[in-house]
Image (tube, rainbow, N blue to C red):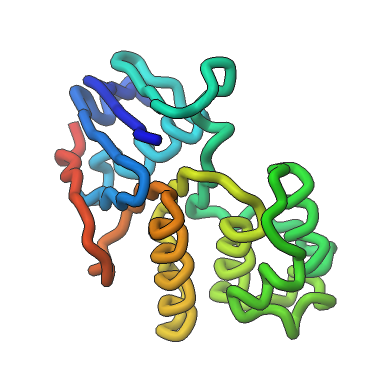
Length: 200
């Protein structure tokens, strides 16, 4: 598979967030989005995820089915963790697994991958910010999707949780997956970088 963006542009609230953005990401590759706040990193990820409309350009996924849009191949983890506080940790993840389809592993195993198996029966509302983030990241492994779109995924998680996340990313890439990650952090991988411009 290969994801290609050609001359992409995005306007939000009457302001051009970015224009003429070009990139290619092949199977097994990680593209890191760099740039100052307001440069369009989050908007680009949301555009690929189908949450923001492009105003120009093309977005193509070679190797995907012609009748399946790009967002259907993607996991998107943004700034909001989108959890239901009254549901348990396991119930939250099971909801996402059912909605996403292509279940890859059992809920408890996915929670174990992010270090939350012991909290499976706790209400999500009692989780710390870091635990909430790890529960959101568990969606990456509970359901199979070849394209990961991660917006500042290390926010609020400690060093041990970061190492777990890095292992998950490494395994995803080794299995032929692709990832685009917006981050200010250094990542322990061979990466390509797309630098977004400053705010218009």
